[in-house]
Image (cartoon, rainbow, N blue to C red; front, side, top):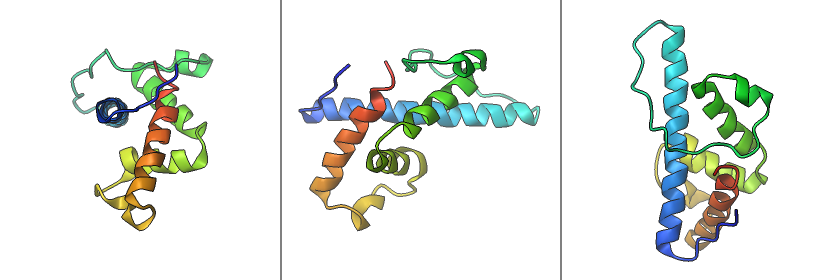
Length: 125
């Protein structure tokens, strides 16, 4: 699946999908942590999110939260290093929305973000 975000609307859709995946990843981590402490569990996240294209036995045999975490971590680990750094910083570790100003100009940041989103989302359908 080739994704080419040529308009702001297409770029916003890609950003929303990546944000949804990150949110589902965090919900999965929380669910696993709560399960291990025998505490309450959050409600089940939306089922209409994304599934990894090429799943292997480890992915198939885990429970849903483990599969989600495995899928996201596998996708990130197979990305180009600059795209990987940007996706992790933007969606998984950034504490502020302007973390990138010390590393990129605005145009360079959005050019790399566009490329990183396309690469990251290519692992999901």
